[in-house]
Image (cartoon, rainbow, N blue to C red):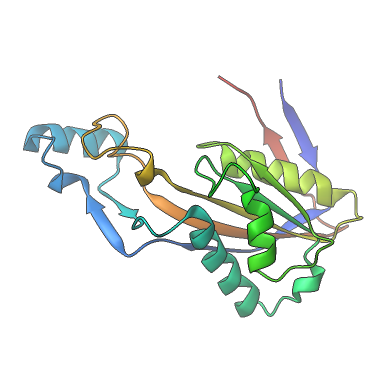
Length: 189
């Protein structure tokens, strides 16, 4: 069983960014009223946010991170690592984490990495960045997780379109010797 604990790390901030356009499942012409009611009752998703075509996943994550760094008055030179988790990166190359490191004006010494994951992405990203920080050499890290799934699905796709919206999140972690950290149970099915 993939159960493990990572100590000496804590979450000190979280924020998100969502696009302004709202897509309501009840307005989808692909569903009858009965189908829509059943869909919403089953999955619980009434509406989601959709980015326009000019918005990339990194744009949403950037806005979330920028707001958090400014609101918390974080010295950007103290960010030692940045993990970007997404199934919709901006490009295959270069890595989106590198683009975000530069856009956020972080140090060139900042360790960056992209991880391609969907639903489990935040948890796997948290376990990955926390394990790196827990050693104590890297003190602060940004976990940026997001997707613009509306670009990879079609409104007529009844299996995917009603579920997935667009968003970007930022989570700030830091080393803390007093923290009990996190216990993870990760697996793959």
